[in-house]
Each structure stands twice: as C-alpha cells, then as structure tokens.
Length: 288
Image 1 (cartoon, rainbow, N blue to C red):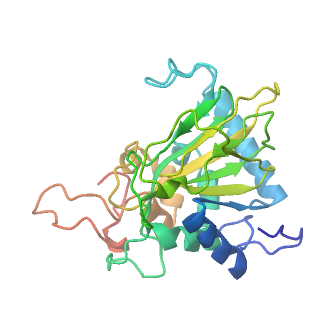
Image 2 (spheres, helix red, strand yellow; image 1 turned 90 degrees about the vertical axis):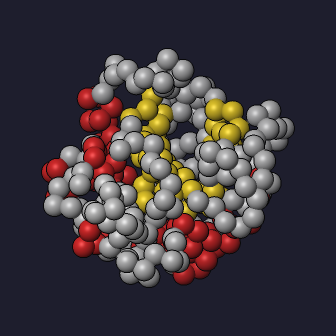
Image 3 (cartoon, rainbow, N blue to C red; image 1 turned 180 degrees about the horizontal axis):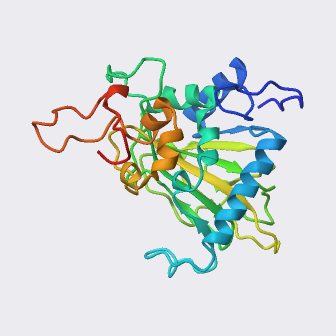
C-alpha cells in the first residue's frame, strides 16, 4: 500500500486517525479477499500514537500482577490487558475511522439488517485487548471453525504502538489460507512475516492461519487488537453488561451499536422478537 505523506488529512469522524484514500480502501478490500490480510501504513497520527501509548501505560500499571483465569497460567510470560472498551473511551476512537469502517462493512455487514442505516456498520466488537509480544504463537485461526469461500464472519484489527519486526514478535501468516477451509497446520514451513512500524494497522480474516514470532529483543512491543464480527456472533465477554456508565454516556449511537447495544437478544417474546434493532433500541444505561 502507498505510504501516506506526513501531511495526510485526518479523519474527522475518528480524531487523529488518517483519512484513507479511495485507492487504499479498494486495495485493502482486494487484499483481504485474495490474501486474507491488508496493511495500512501510518494509520495513527504521531499525536494519536502518543496518546494511545500513554493511556495503555496507565492500564498496564493499574493491572500489573493481575491474574486472569484461563490465561495467566497458560501464558505466564505474556502481558495482556483485556476489555479496552471498559478502560478508556480513547481506545474506541480508532475503530470509528470512516475508511476502516468501509473496509469492514464490505465483509461483516449484514445486508438484511434494515433497522440501521445502510451506510452504517451493523457488525459488532467481539473482543478488544492490548498484547505485548512475548512467547511465540503457533499458527492458528480465530474464527472458531474454518470455512472455504468468500464469506467471513470475523476479522482482527491490530494497531502497532511500537515497531514490530522479526526480533520482537511480529505477526506471522500464511497468505490465502483463509480460503482453505482447513484448520491451521501448526508447524507449516515458511509463513510470511508482517513487520509493522508504530502507528501502522493490519487487518486479517479470522480464518487466516496466523501466529507470532517470539520477542527476543528485550524490549516490549505493544499492539491494540480488536476483533470485529457479524452482529450475531457471540462476543468473548459481556460487553453491553460490563461497560462502565461513564464511558457509555460519552459514546455516540454509532459507537454504542458497535458495542452490541442494537443487537441484544430480547429477554422474552413480550420484550421483542427480533435482535436486529436500530438506534432507538439503545438503553438509557449499560445492560438492558
């Protein structure tokens, strides 16, 4: 993809992220269809990068020593912060980039979701974490099950907050493997490396075989990683129930829809019979 000029305009809908050109949007869509991944260089402005790093540093310090059942005992050498949407509204801003939304809508929007505008996302956030490279990650898929063909139901967005190369745990992937309809071969020889500079973003189809190299540099390399998925896929955490009220009140309707507040299943048939709802279904506070 073409490297942006330092003076590239910012996207007014997502403060301090760069507006993507029409060519970049089309190239990202084509790369995702054919290769299973796309890279966006210079996605965050220098100011946004500094703000994201400072916000994450506060969360890392606040959660230092925390134990996460099912994770801490399995990957004791890795560092991770879960549920960024609950920590600071700032982390949600990059997800509102208009060009990024167009790319994701091309794969994840339900065309038969009439309650939301056709030009608005109806996909949702499934998980949002920060991860520091540590031990190697073997090739895997995040889509829960493989499936061949052009349709997917889940994608990952990674935003590098530090430079990431072969020495400090950059992403590995197998181009085209999202179309194989097979689980990953954990010891596949010759996966491609995807180095990223701080501020770059990468997207990949969750069916893609991918992993990460070990971090041998002695320097931490953090990334923000969001899982975006079709509205009907079950999130990893109870995002609508766990969101702090102060963050909920600061979000736009579009952001609340991204977090799943328009697609909560009704309590029973008397509350409703359709989970594909519009902005008018957003509750006055988190939960129901």
